[in-house]
Length: 199
Image (cartoon, rainbow, N blue to C red; front, side, top):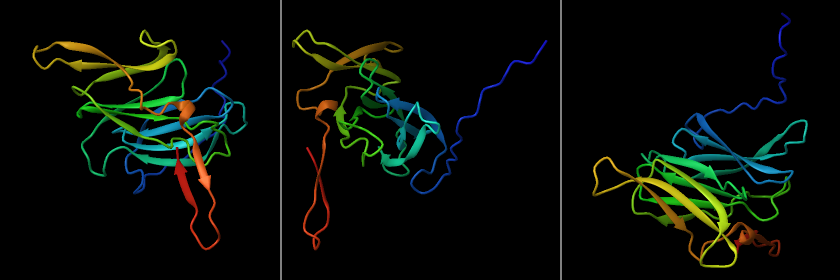
């Protein structure tokens, strides 16, 4: 029998541990749907993130490092699980297995290879209990006539030993949606520093 052809190597990216990224990477997520996406490389704890531009049609798909994010202080015992909106693919969520909260990060509007930052907002929300697994999707809301973001979390019941609940969250009105995640750069006179203001 003739040997089957192996996978073709397109690009190889070397990642080294340093003080900004002390753990080895264990999770990989893609945020966005167009020609340029955000490639999120997460540490074993899920709390240290490197964000690269990613162009699927390019001969070298993985672009430069665009952003470093830390969702918990250095040395923290927090463990996060990352998921992306299953329908719109424009929001990254981190739910913690040992903390009563979750974090939502909308991809900046107009994300491209020339963008200066991928996730201008990190929005923290309290929860009734930690969770082991979660998923999020944009769907039509029964309360409103427009689509909204829903978060599904698997949590252990406090009052029932060995029982698990699936908790569904509809995100509050004051949450910053992807279409609102704009980065405004205001240039001041030369003697003043560049001010970055998010809206």
